[in-house]
Image (tube, rainbow, N blue to C red; front, side, top):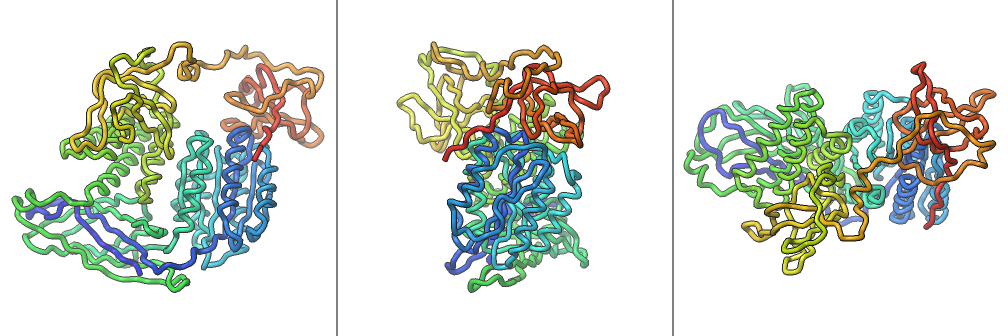
Length: 615
């Protein structure tokens, strides 16, 4: 029912003292074909002001796509939240998909972000329909920071763990660049759920589909591993993202969460062996248990495996074939290095963080692993992030990308989740530009499954092959000219050689110059309004402006900033003539007033009109 296997990073370990080695443990639930488990699902969607326009449109379309993929025996509820929490779909069987989608379709953007209120309501709905034979899950989507209700990340994370113990698991989805990734990852980890970074607004449907595929594939839960290490063996590090603790017997206990059909759950460990003699070396007893689907029911299974290493002479170890699991261990090692480097950088130890990544790059190249395209891609990523960290310019987008890449690799074994990242490197805007290909090779940057890939456009090359290309100058839609492409030693992918320039065709607008130009400078003067709100110009986009909402406060109408990054309870100097309860406005700029505890609306004010959502 639950099978396990293991491999060391060296087929034969060298005899001697103080040996450091890595081991990869695999767990897989193998079950006879049976009907998929039904879902008890609550979608909790942020409709705060910062989601207004295209983000909310795509989030709702993604939610409607979830309805299309559910079956009549699944239970669905839908909660939306800003400062108020509304249940637009109470818990019910998915028997009338048109009605469910119509309820989602009518959602419109509102005020500030009461994340805790929306999430707890979703948990409440799942709990009312709780069934241990179903997958009981809350999918929480947000694009911003919690600025109303429970806001303490520690409290929210701990509560997520408590809800999971009661049977309600949370998956979190961060939308765009404004959310708190540490909070969302923390909540997902505490609940043994999943986390996703939706980088592009039109990526939402695909990411929701990945999560639904995962939920359908859950065949085991609560995978727990206990390590009983042999004498002379100690645990240096855990390469997979898991809950690690010491049990009452002083042994290391590791919680790995869910098992998915057809997908190995990987546990990478770094071990120190004080002394290894030639022969068969006992390393540990591995005790494991999980709740697995068996005969269409959830049943507990457990077992113990004795782990041994093969030890030979130094010469035998050197001549032994390379372990077939080296690539999988490399992925985990890279992910762990990214996590460590980010933590060091945030402690102000930028030089150490940079060195961790650069040393790893050198090690991979010295071992020839850069001849594998996936590792070659990771080397580009590591060099890019090392450079950004060295310049203390990782930025919000880079941080999210780095955290997401590390998280996905250390928790899942899916190629469509690792290495995702579509944020353009700043260097693309400063590249030299040419207007013709000449004798060079034309390349094009496209987005595939959340990843930036480079494709060859010039005839005479294999357009199906991948291209190793510097991560720092990748940007979706960009075209380049390179001097030449050369095949890797195993002829599986191309490498770029020589100078790289960006290509723009004569007469075509340069989207990257336009993107890098800032919007018109605001005068900084306080806004003045016309006679009434009806006289304001209308817009259905927010862009880089600020969203403001008018609310009733006792007998007064107050204006407040609902875009992320602003204090939601501060008063605002705002033209009284255009104030209407519940109305949303787009303002060029919001400045802090001289008193330091209120705002001033500056520049042009427009009336925000919710965009029309079409099927």
